[in-house]
Length: 455
Image (cartoon, rainbow, N blue to C red):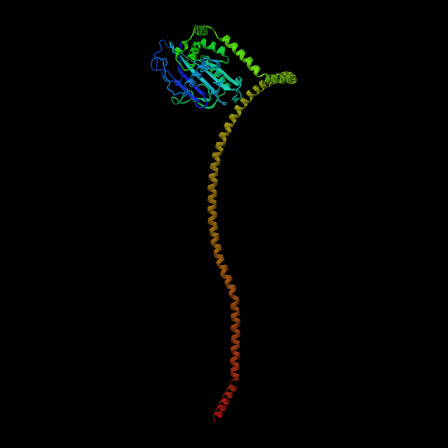
């Protein structure tokens, strides 16, 4: 017998109160397990302290009306009682589909613990809309159920519901699912890969109601008990309401439902419902028939294409054979080339060693050349300074000579003028000597004239 240990709800629920990633934990508060089975813990899991304990024997969820108690029960019963006829609160075929958005892949996972051995088993349900579009057509609502034995590699905490799922939540109560949500196909592939890598998980996937019910029975989870629970909670009444019959026929019906397998009648109901859906979709089916009739020609082309594909496959097989021969030759050539590459690598190493020494010698030569260039430049600078001093002296002498040559003409003109002045002075003195008697006579005559005038 199993007891409910944990419930995980991911990306599901009504629009106003959705479960993003919620875990209801009931572990470790009940009585100790009498005969615990040996378990292999995770690598980083802490060592257990004391014997394992059973889940809580009872729990109370305090929520006001409309808080989501019935939604939680609907989701739990959808795992243990597949089919819309087993939906809590009536036979509404769309109540569970209203809990899923277009982009959702909703998950409801239940972890059960055996009361004697403490072994756990996880059963869950995944559902999504085909084509990522909400529709009124129930055929577009995909559902699947799965189960596994939790252990190293996969537990309820690290269900691959998202592309990045942590092995253990970093904080208690925090979600370990990070990244983009997986589709149902991606989730199934991840679950299958985990089952191949860890055979002890005993992963099982099912998409048919009857087979899932049989699998639950094989696991030791009797769906009939949950059907009683559903009927007791149909109107949120007590367990006594299940047996509150008004007449003998009602009690007989209850007894027959308890001891009779309802799979045959459920199959008949599904068959009748299927015929009803087909009658309702008669116009669509007629259009589909016309479409099928019009597709026969295309199917003929497909047959021809299939024959062409067969021929292409034969050609591909021959090409593959040639390719394999080429691959073998290339493998042999690759072995030879690897040996040659080893020799070349050794040569490259030796060349690198020589290059290193050459670079050292080049650096030393560069330093010597730089020192020689410096000394040559120093000597050249000294010679240039001496040459510059001599040229400065020559420049001063040349400037002096040039100034002298510029003053020579003025000196010559001065000398010529001095000669002319000397000759003119001599001529004037000679003229004055010659004119002295005349001047004396004129002066005497003037004196006489003045005297005469005065007289």
